[in-house]
Image (spheres, rainbow, N blue to C red):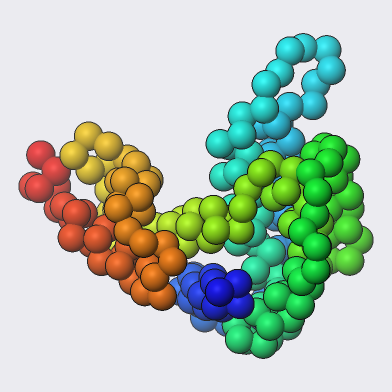
Length: 210
């Protein structure tokens, strides 16, 4: 199950990267730098200021982890195709699951490892998920949903500026969350079903939106 889900996510990431830039692998984009910036945003949502009262915004923290995962998968895909990379990642994740610890310190260690090696610290990322009590199934569901929405936006005029984020009084990510809850995320065709459901619901014209 884990390897299948990894293969699915890697294939989706390869697809969206190719949609944006056909030669994305040859460009050697600094994905590690994007992870660094996202990590700082994540820490802001978790809270780090000792001079004021702060409560972790865990929903936002998890959303930032999903964004980091996008960039992490892109780094992993620089080393090969989805199937081979999925097998390697599964091996790295094998063994005893990490125990929750100090999130801030573990985030700093993860970011440092990613920056120093310019590679994705998969084990460190798994530690962050444990710290946030975020199971892999939750990561999978959230990632596939965000990836499908990104692809859907690109296919429906996002780059040209004609895409409508607001449908029937709600933003597209709200529709996405509602649709995702109604589907079986364990199904092999989860991403395709999600995309089709979004397409069925999307008005597509100003006339329909009026």
